Image (cartoon, rainbow, N blue to C red; front, side, top):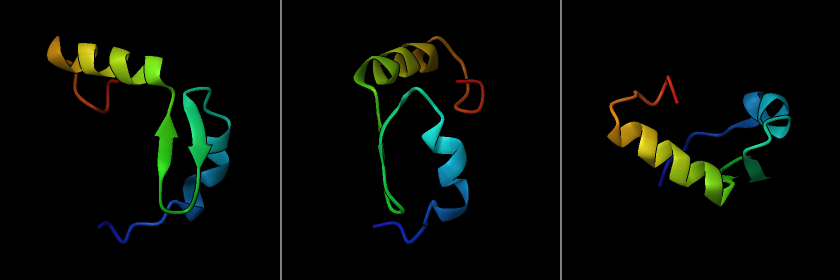
Length: 50
């Protein structure tokens, strides 16, 4: 389990339309965004590009 906390990034993440739920320890993304991200990754895009 990760010990990384998202406390400093929470304001930015709250404004992201792809974020459904947010806590200091976890980010839940919109299911449609997840599918699109996987397709882009398979097509060769890097996580930073996605």
